[in-house]
Image (cartoon, rainbow over all chains, first blue to last red; front, side, top):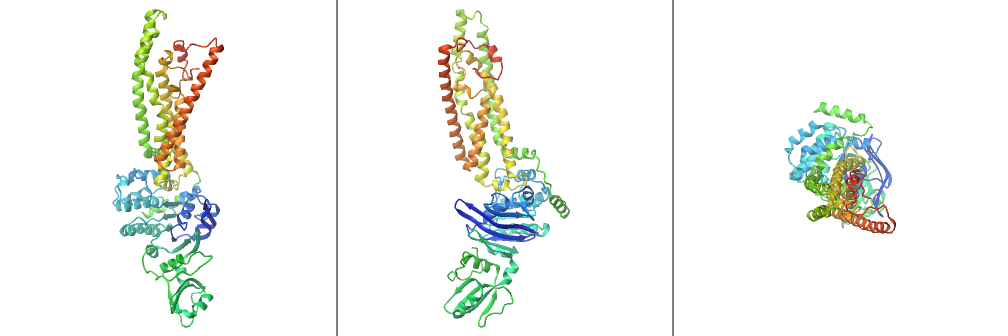
Length: 303
Length: 268
């Protein structure tokens, strides 16, 4: 069953298209990462999926065929928006009361136990909680609904490394204990590489990649060889990123078969998810995958 | 925890199609808007106490006047004159109270949706199981409803309070100063201002600009209606002067009986 499925999904704001012709599917049970540069349309896509905006073109269904924004879809999806908004003038206890009343199911015991573990006092107003605590409160309120799909928009952006780790710990616990599917947009590639097993890559409003991380890593490799035969190789293969130095060329290629023979004189290296993401982010629009000038591939760091 | 988890998961997969009951919004609205609702109650409570005490005194003085017989005697004329002098300023409270609808629209109506938009909490609230349209309807009804009831009661109070001034000729029927404060006109204005505030908040998406806009729009409407009433009165008095044999003279001609006819209440 596909937890998310879109067909030719599009959304415009005036004359600019924030999303165009997005067709992809995420099967149930994944922790999917949605990555892309700023302005690629990540938030628009997430808002469409949770029913906060309506599509201008195409269709999107969730939880195995439910129309987005429908009552059953709202019941089964929990959304934690960017900057994890909570009512800052209310206490955690009152936020729980509100969440209970606004939802068909709400696991009060879980919410209380979780906030207890996190040392978040129930009687303190959210305005007086730290950023990390507020994010954890928002996440707890979302998970206590026992959703089938948890959608998170840049939840890590405002958090320090420790809070990030704790936040992702809570998400991972929910995935393993409850089997909830997750779609998470983030810039923190290093963090995603550790947790995500499905990747959706968005640039300029279009989906470039939507596949399981394992398959992606297996089907891509970095070929290193003499620059003079690089053009010939590039013509033969599906090149994602083409980096040339004076004598040597590095081609990140998408192989149709992982066991393709390596051209003579060339070496093949496996690629990490982060290298892959960076390569796709650098390589521009899918219509014209123009190779960009060489930059050393960073082994760490965020986009 | 596993058992608990399993139980709720089963509930979830049953996916009942009936919407969540409306009553769930009562507590939600109260938790979020208790400040507004309490503020409105306190404001009107204080005004009602003031108008109530003052009104009783005025009514007493007026009753003494009315009971003076024969009405045309010099002593009674002097008494009536002294009522007018003594309560000369009694009706001036009407002027600041003109601001009430605009204030309520700005402080109760405008932040309802603007605050959600400004702080981003709409992205939380509108993705909950209750659904956003129903959430908005419930919120507006649960804040606007009590507001209308309080304003309705207040309209009856002001109608009673201003009665003697109309009877004594210090205020006239359709007086722009009191028209908007009495009976159904007042809750009407309050609800309209509340709706204008909520709508402005939705469009402008920021609290303070939405409040300012609400004040300007409601104030402008109030002025326009005031001018219209003045115009009405002018044309009416011209009509009366030309052919009205049955018209009552302004002032003492209004009897207590006609006012007691009830709060259907326009003094035409």
